[in-house]
Length: 324
Image (cartoon, rainbow, N blue to C red; front, side, top):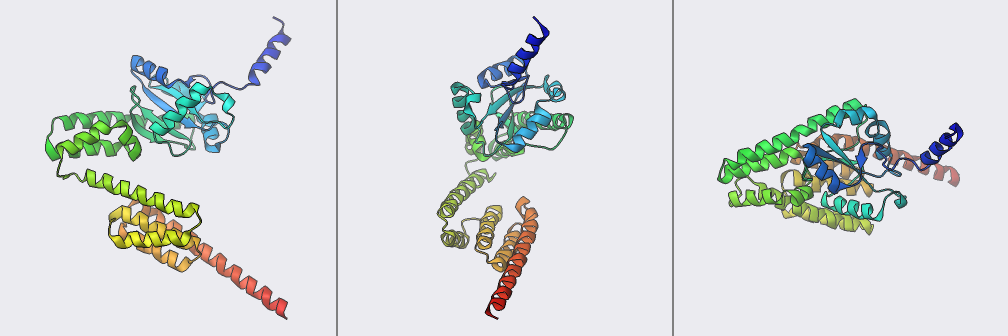
């Protein structure tokens, strides 16, 4: 073959781009990947991505996941699965599209990129996403997350030797250590949840109460969001006030409800009340993760208040000049 022909063929192939955004070493076939992982005694890395519309997804792929240093660093530990949700749906087959939609629901994916580490059966044990790092640093990050599977398995093995509430507490500890979304736990660890309930019918571990509280909070959030979609901010605020007065929530869930109150007040530009609401929310659970972020939100509201007041003064000045 002449050199010109070789170059033309290479350019023609390159015009279509790689089959996978991550390039060599990745697959779209989830079931085949699970089979390979079982045969090779590896775990899976599932990359839920939007390859042609999601900026952090594209940066993660271009700077890390497609690099040889990344592939070399994980090839003996992980089978790589790209689950793409592109705007240009012609990039993936109808079969792959249907598979990805099913997995998106099954793994309760809320945003992109989401990367999950799972065992060969597909049961997740760790979750991560975009990180501004080198391929080598990301490999080290994944190696730390891989330890979560060992901790999970050790926790479950420990629980098997226990009975009653102590068994339930050990199972709860193992579940919580993975840091997975509640829906993901329900979809993949339902048998463990059932075992907790059976071992601890009086709920000494507090797990059932915690799950009920989270379900109630999700119901509240769905109702608030319904008001927001209809631009009924007064209705949303009334719901929040009613919920806080009901006493149905305590601790961190109550703090989250109170945070909604502050944000709605801010949207209504009642900045003084919103700032006071943030202080009240922080006092509910001052050591929580959310409490650690409230000071930042408060600074943003104080700045918004100053800008609003400055704008009002400027507008009043213009009106006076016009009157003169």
